[in-house]
Structures are given as C-alpha cells and as structure tokens.
Length: 436
Ligand SMILES: [Zn+2]
Image 1 (cartoon, rainbow, N blue to C red):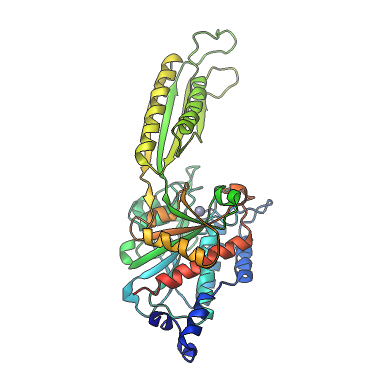
Image 2: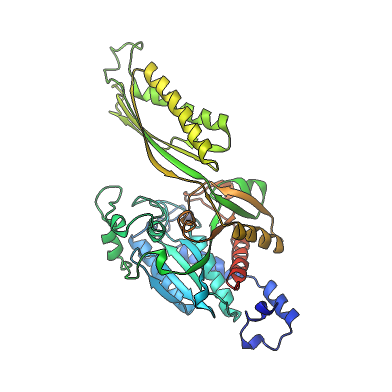
C-alpha cells in the first residue's frame, strides 16, 4: 500500500489511501487520443488501399520518426538516438539506479504493410506515457519508450536489425554495410541520409533495463477466431531456415519424351507437398516453402535448376529438427527418383525463446483484473522482443488481427482492441516500474 502512495505527486497527498488505490486501479488510457495518434501515423506512407509503405531508412520513415520525436518531446522526455537509429524516449523515475522499464516496438512497415504491425506497440507506449503524465504519477523506475530501426527487413535484410545490434547479435559495421534487395543502397548511408545515425552506442550494455514489454497485434487468427481480447504469449517459436538447390537436365519440351526426364521443378513440386505433409503429420509445428526460383523459367525448356526455401517453426526445437530430418530424407528419395542432384543448407537457426515467467503471468493477471478475456499462447512470428528477451526480462501483449491477416494493406485491429491492449500495457508498466 505504501508503495502505491509513493506513485502520486503532492497534489494527491490529501487523498486517503483507499481513494488513492481506487484512483490507480481505475486508471485507463484515452481511447480517442490513441485512435487519433494511430490515424495520424496512418497518413505517413499511406497507400491507395489504406495500408502503409514506410520502409526503414526511407523518406517516409524519416517523416514518421520526426513526428515521434516531436510527440516524445511534448511529453517532456529526453530523446536519445543511438548509432543504429533506435529512438529512446526517457521519462525519469525517482530511482534511476533501479533499472528502467522499456516498452516499444517498430514504426517501419513491409512494402506494402499495414497500419498496426509494430506501430501499435510504439504508439501504445506513447499513450501510456501521456496517461501517466496527465495523472501526475511518479514512478520509482525510469520508463523508456523505444522505436527499433528496421524490424521488418523488407528493404534491407535481415529483420530486427536495430534490436539485433542492440542485443549484441550483429555488429553495427555489419549492419551499416547491408545492401538493399536490389543491391544499390547501403544501409548505413541511408540511415545517415535521413538524419538518424545517432552517436549514442547501440548496445544494451549502455542501459540498465529491469524489464521490457512489447504490445503487438497477433498477426495470426487465434484471438480473432475465438473472440478473445488479449493474448499472452509464453514465448516465440523456434525458427529454422533451410535453402535447397536442385539440379536436373534442361531440354526442349517438345521432342523430349516424358519418361527419363530430369525435371528439377517437378522434383520440387513433390518436395513442397512433403513439407506440408510432414508438418501436418508431426503436429505442433508449421512448415512452409515461401520462396522458389526456377531456371531457366521458360515455357519450352524443361527446368534444370530450382532453388527454394523451407521455414520450420515449433515450440520444441528437437521436434522441429526431427521434422527437417524427415523432410530431408524424403527429398533425397525424390531427387534420386527424378534424377536430380540435391544440395541442402541450414541458413538460420534460432532457438525457441520463452519470455520471463513473472512478466508473462503479469500480462494474464492484469487482463483478468481489467475483465478482459485472455488466452495463454505462443508467438509464431519473430519480433524485436526475440532479441531484447535475450539480454533482459521481456514479455509481450497481443491483440486480435481481423481474419488473422498482417503484412498486408487490409491489416486491421479494431480501436477497442487497441485500447484494451494499451490498458494492459499501462497497468503492466505501472506495476513493474514501481517494484523496488
Ligand atoms: Zn511487427
């Protein structure tokens, strides 16, 4: 009780303790203000179909960042821009030595993408900051909003670049040297061009972070289908990426009989089915072929080369590995039968990432206190939190995606759901930033 009293500044001192607690419990964010802020963001890089094209380090990204910085300064925050262009807005607490509570996401989009992916996490944290400010609440710990640079990786790969460097998984020099997907622009130069190559070191070692939260749309159909208001992911699935190359024999399609062909695309077609079947059979996992290049890709030449990718995800890393071994075995049989040479390579492997148990449970408890329906779940998508969670304690809050759609222009989350998720974030932050 005493710690709750200390939340409030002197204007609240004449209230009795019971009134103070009620004031605190009843605190809610301002839905109209959150909606306005989201709508203002949705004008920067707007597409004809009401989506957004606001890729990292483009002119639109700069306009978005400038607006964020303006909003942060209006909140009285200290704004810090690091070498990767990650933007931090700090609201000092009474005891900065205790370590800060960090919350945010990303302001960049796919090409094209939607108005909520990442953006809700940044603007939800901003709405929490505004709510805390206007109620004159003092927090024990610093509260910091963050906008991570280039989470999407749509123009410059890889994804989660800003948070990845911050967490120590890449060097900034490596990130600066990344070329865009057409091979022309250089990331570090573009970051400098838009004026967001800061001087503050891009490393978690420069910060004392006690806990981190990321509010995000689910990007999948579970909450929407089951009509549940809040999702509490216990962590993020493991992610295994593979690249596969097939080599057959090219020939004129007309004179070459069907028997005895070494058709690389046909072999691939069977392999695609294998990926799907294995994922179904094993359960508790997903397996996807998302990319394929076919050569020479001509209607009257039997394809002699195919490259494709396999993405395998599961909560259980060994299960995912077992699935890949099964797929590979089947691939070998098919390649042999179709007379193709098979080469496989493991491109990227990230272990499943459990979130902090206490923070994850807190998301559920607070949702229940606020009378929101809540589902314990896992995140199939990677997020900045995958990186942040490696160097501090982290958790996420999900809100429904209409029809489970994201990374598309029609991406939609009703403002009532944005409001509910932001209220959960508000109370997670109030509670965590006052733990001493
Ligand atoms: Zn996102």
